[in-house]
Amino acid sequence: MLGHVLMGTTDTILVGQLGDEALAALALGNTWTFAGMVVGIGAIRALDPVVSQAFGAGDDEAVGAALARGLGLALWLSVALIPWYLMAAPGLAWLGQPAGAIGDAAAYAAWLLPGVPFTLCFGAVRAWLQGFEVMRPATVAILAGNLLNIPLDLALVYGWGPIPAMGAAGAGVATTLCNVFLLVALLWLVRDRIRAVWRGFGDALTPAAQRPLLALGLPLGLQTGLEVWAFNATTVFVGWYGETALGGHAVALNLCSLTFMYALGLSQAGATRVGNLIGARLPWSRAAVLAVGLGALGMALSATVFRLAPGALVGLYTKDAAVLAIAVSLLPIAGFFQVFDGLQVTMFGVLRGAGDVRVPTLANVLGYWVVGLPAGYLLSFELGMGPQGVWYGMVLGLATVSAFLAIRLRQVMAVGAARVHA
Image (cartoon, rainbow, N blue to C red; front, side):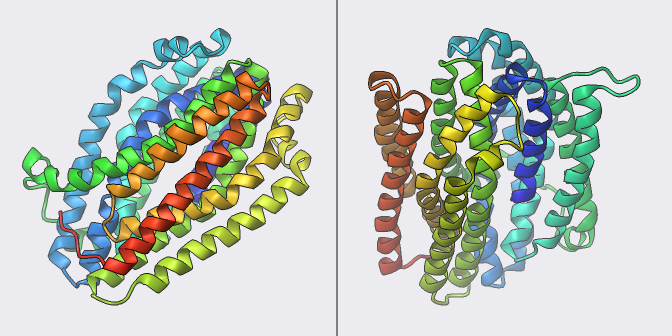
């Protein structure tokens, strides 16, 4: 998970050297494209309970069939996302974002589009492997992808020889090429495992075959989308303050994303472990509590670093004094919500492993859209706290989500969970 976000970190650092307008374009392009992609990524997570529980139950046939259906879901979702990527320019203009950054943001989105099916198919294969506790191949592929991303970014962002400098759009080209590489590398690394279970797509691409997986995947896609869209909304809010504020927000948010990968990794591990135990009809509450506790502990440590050394961290991204000042003012606030962020994502993970995907979605509706964003708008624009007010609103939102999920997890542990099928 850290390897995934490190690619974006490389993009942010290299594009950030071109100035606040280029950094704002990258932030807007990422905000727009990920708002659509996140639904696909969330839907693919339907494989988490299906594969992990099938593996725990020793159901090899279901494990094999899940790969074909997961890849089929990834391909259908890729087609559905095409219009979203192509609407970046008018969409960002409608949201009132800085006009000088919209053109490059739209170009960045256009270059990302060809990589969408590769991204989602990689996610499907990775989730399938994770379900039976095989993590090394995906990790090796991602590490290799990061090594490839650096020279591609340098050549395409700044130009090299006959390759023209493309700025933020060049980062989009590099990302697409890396996504193609990731899928090809992963398929090659696990070719023997796939060959052992692959029986072709069969009916996996038909609506009837996709319906059970979608019943799990769409609530998960909506659940993940509601969270990411809320953070995207904070980017829109901060964008109303101009390109400098947006650049500082992008830097602080990227640092938060880096540390969040620790908790997200534990969330995935919790989903797998809980699913394995439920499939094997063994007690799973202890594994769930341990994942949540480790998530909170790790994020408390990162929160401490954010509060003690914000200037040193932000200085890795930009030397622009104005952008740096905004980011430094935001990063300590992130320390408040890091612990809540770790709690909520690990609780979502263990509930997903238990097959509980619908009720937890209400937590994001309440926490982000009823509490967090309205509070952030009020603090920022009505009470004059600026970008910092937006971030304090998200602290309240994450705290609300965590409280809701803690109650739900306690209920599910008390009642128990049954195996889910697709």
